[in-house]
Image 1 (cartoon, rainbow, N blue to C red):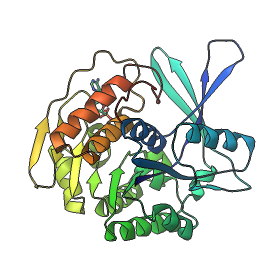
Image 2 (cartoon, protein in one colour):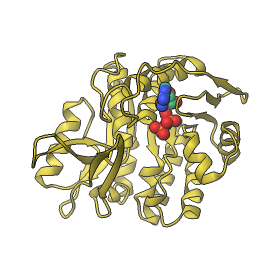
Image 3 (tube, rainbow, N blue to C red):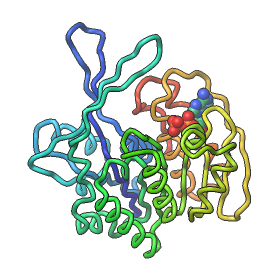
Image 4 (cartoon, rainbow, N blue to C red):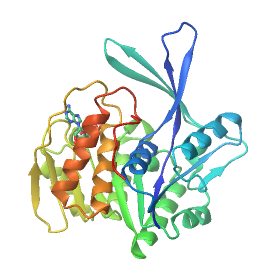
Length: 304
Ligand code: ADP
């Protein structure tokens, strides 16, 4: 059995149901979204584990039950007695979504505070998936511990896959964010950035500049997503290519576009697809996800 460990924070998602005085509750978060689509894209010969930390309260129990019910392993979700999960609330105004977060003291911020638990979570895994959000929420010494655990994992032959997912609000400042993102990319085999964020925070003039920057930092392969635009990539052969992606039939809600693209890409690659074919698989999955509301679209992935 092959195994993927996805590392990060899942949160409770509160949203209006339409019924006065009633909020709906779901669970989502970038690395959990990718784990969800990996689970639905890969067959039973793959174990997908979520690596995180939650509390011991009822809300945390509900989250762990949800993840379990999706067929994602929860053995490496640590339980911390004095913490609980982070929450966010979505408001929709004139078609624009805005988010309010309560996550500053979430249990997931401690997900790397026990290095021995991290090593156990990665032990025997084939792929580790993480993001700039995973790193951003941690204290400095835990950022170091997580990078070190992943560096050792890569040294043992594990594949480290990283989405920079730049969220300056999670970081002390943009300069500090840029420094850690480059350290993270340096130990990653495959880096999956989104061009609009990279242009904003690193000043890249075009997607090829994003590819070159991450390769210069040490990433072996880079795939740059760009909304409806071409995907620019550098595979293991060191050559930069571009690929146009199929047009989405309809765009309802782009939440989790990048997360689902990453899952579709990675699942195809793990099944032996070439880089261009894996990009097309990622784009097809993302186009189905953005055609429906919410981060987790149950019938978007049909592989496995
Ligand atoms: P993120 O969600 O991380 O900001 P992007 O907006 O670049 O990432 O989108 C990720 C992927 O989702 C793209 O590579 C593409 O495959 C798909 N996608 C996003 N927006 C569209 C769109 N308007 N039409 C078709 N595909 C899209």
